[in-house]
Length: 254
Image 1 (cartoon, rainbow, N blue to C red):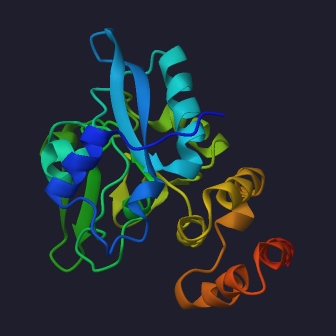
Image 2: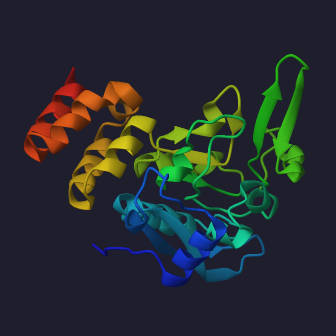
Image 3: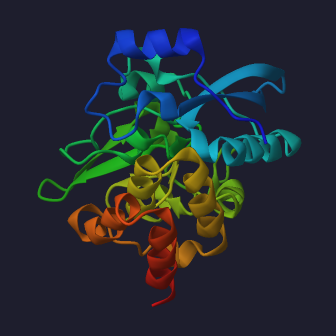
């Protein structure tokens, strides 16, 4: 399969926008640009969409959008977030579909899965992000034009419910529309444990883990992360990948 790389102009734009820094959990050389064909809301075809992802999942992301193209599923636009100076709110307000952006989860200091290039946002306006203030009993909607799409029983063009399974079949089995608070309707991602593993092993070994993850999504989504993942990751460096894979398989089967 094609080995994807980051476009040179995109790399420059990302660095200028501060969209990637040395603090990022993914090395810059592990990010890749994928060119996407898509159909917009007027039915016009485009061949210039660009989405930046972790290199390991580039083929899968391409396959997802190829399926959406065949279905004529409308997408407003697909641009790297450096075109918005790395500002997620500006990207959402422009109804832009995207993936990589080094940033924390809104309102926290927790690293977003977008920082790994392993979370895809699709049509934010038609599938808004809703965050709740439980004490005040209020909700904030991002982007603000997403308010008219909150009733998910009132089906409208560009809503993602009909394509959730396509993302899951290609490894993005966690959909933010199933969350209670916040509700992130445009958001598809891998598990955090899987993201941490893929970012810390080689591209070649990552491809193996990624193939396994697509076959066992429920087990992959239960992977530990953070400090609980350290015993497994320690085996990758010493004694090496062979023992790492053996321990990884045991972890999934227990």
